[in-house]
Amino acid sequence: MKNITIIGATGTLGLPITKKLNSLGVQVKAVVRDIQKAKEILPDSVEVVYGDVANKESLKEALIGSKTVYLNLNTTTWNVDAPSHAEREGIINVIDVSKELGIQHIMQIVGIDSSHPEFATTGMEYKTNLIRKPAMEYLKNSGIYYTFFHCSVFLDSFPSFIQEQEFAIIGNHSYPVYFTNTTQLAGNIFNAIDNKEAYNKAFTIQGKEGVSFPEAAKKFVGIYNSDIKVMEYPLDIIPHLGLPTKEDEQFMEHMLTYVEQLKEEQVSQKTWEILGEPELTIDDFAKTIVGR
Image 1 (cartoon, one colour):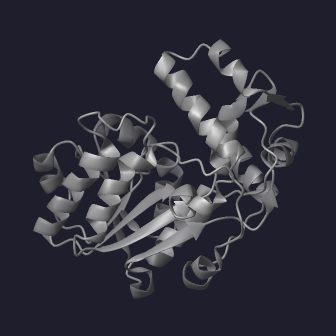
Image 2 (cartoon, rainbow, N blue to C red):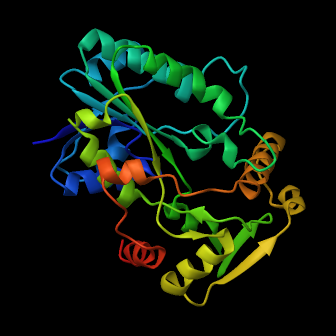
């Protein structure tokens, strides 16, 4: 039986990935900070243990007996000078503890932008990469087998764009995006467990359909709820959204400015050969969301 330990198992992407791996017969251990919350939302067959990436001692207890670790952490700021980030100091802590415990393989989800800067048509850099890159380099130099999944935009995020029967798109998004989904990534992770062909490699995770964000949104709502209207707004609407802080506004503007100038190309053939091809279209995945 395949085994994996997941850090970030209860997040927006981590939760469906954990559930899918569990349904595929993988023995999953979830390292979480809130055990009660995790047990409420994860399948009973998932082992839930306490661990905090900011605390090495807790990680030593949580990771005992693990062979393969999957990191599903996320950075939502560009403050490089902050004293600690889960995707920087937190991951470095995981790596240090993993070396002590003899863990063989660490996998991590990152953005497609970090492996293909040439997709940025204006030469713009996504600033959160400045935070995650030191830990990625640390992992590469650790002696532990690593696998990076450089992912395109997740269709799983689409329901979060919907409010009051409106799918709101902010910015001018005309370039093609090869949208992926958590079902696809979970399958890739499954095929990477104990797979020597996946060791010390970076894989792009893309779907097969290259469509613009508005086109994808229309396809999605056509299945999800045909009463929902897809609406497009300029970036200058951001200050009027009522975000909690000015920093949140600045981060959203930076993220959307980056995404609207990102022009993906299909570069995932190597991934498909080693880890399997995408099986779901945008329409197919929308049907799975409706069924959840």
